[in-house]
Length: 133
Image 1 (cartoon, rainbow, N blue to C red):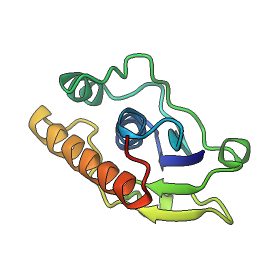
Image 2: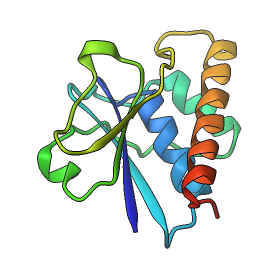
Image 3: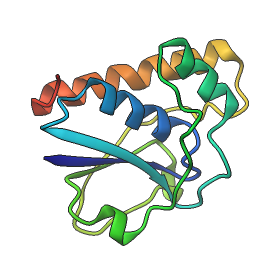
Image 4: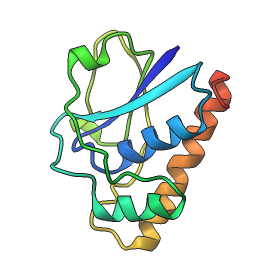
């Protein structure tokens, strides 16, 4: 079982979408994902919840959490969400960066485009690693 961490600063948008898509599309016996941030927000952005709800993924119970050493222990891959120098780093963990726009405060049409790009990138990762269900 491989674990992937999707991380950004506030863990309230892109990383939440990525982890939710990953867990929905991955073979559960092969891989799982969670999301975290270096400065977690109080809640998932409402526009992100709404956009994900449109595709049948409920983020209403999702809570931003801090990326800690304990959380990262044993993970296979850290995927950061284009947050530049503010992106988290975990020594010794393989890292990839997806330069994605922050959906916070964006109009729903823009959030949908970001959501769809996240899904495409997650699907490509799952295919590349052989983890797709």
